[in-house]
Length: 115
Image (cartoon, rainbow, N blue to C red; front, side, top):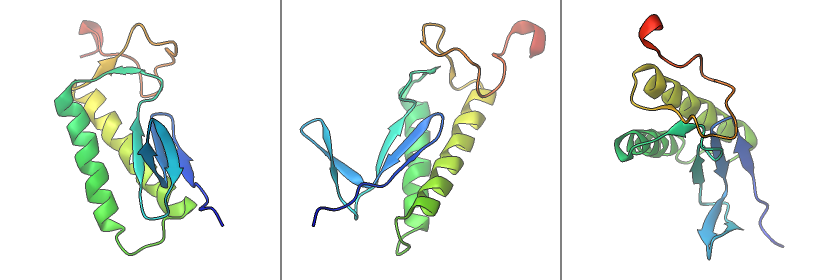
């Protein structure tokens, strides 16, 4: 019987119980894979991405021994959404003006008028 792929999708985070192999996802109940900002709504630098990845690793460690189920995946995704909001509010990332999706889902962009 093939393993079932579980996933959790928030606006800016996708989590999969899978591993990446040859550019595709292979279901793996013991592996959690992270996709950050799949719609490229933000402009990222390596430092900001590493903060999200580090928080992800920390959350995975916190859930060690717990089932990788829908509920736990959603909790991890929600926590990571909060991390992205914090980065945006701190000015460590910013909205991508060339994104196909400009809905300002985390609040209006920072401008000199609203700083």
